[in-house]
Image (cartoon, rainbow, N blue to C red; front, side, top):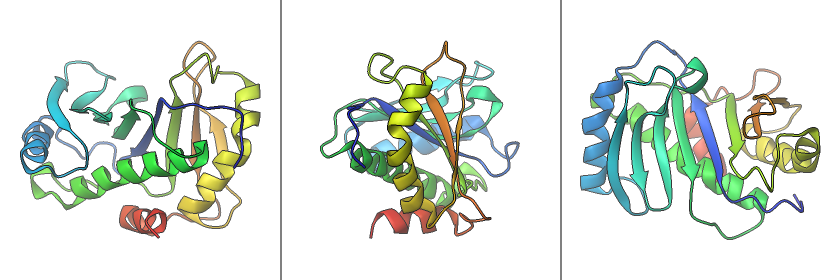
Length: 198
């Protein structure tokens, strides 16, 4: 998983299985309760409401280490975790950890009755690099990350082949969708999480 790219500011997003089945405002008290009960690791700080933006970050849970959001960007609802603070390890190890953190939040939402009956897709994720200097939205970045993304997909979904598709135009940050091949990824969010925690 070696690469010369040392990207730290990375976001991952797992999509909602039923993109119409959510009540955005119901997540505000849920995220506040997470802060009160310290439901997630790290320093949980505040909740921000961006529900007025049609394809914005939705409802955000701000933490010192990174920001969680029930994100609506691109018209696709899902759980996003955007890392702000550096992580130790290789880029591949950091991506696995960022996915583990995001999957943990997805699992909490799926188990939270106050959040509704949310279910997240376990066959695909979107990964975005927010450092345009280190990871410009160019084919060279995808080539550089190819082996890292393949290893990440294997850790999440098992043996390939997997599909990696560039998500955004060159004017936006580098973003790829990584999908399981051959109908894999059917084990659910808890299954993906258990894979990464082995």
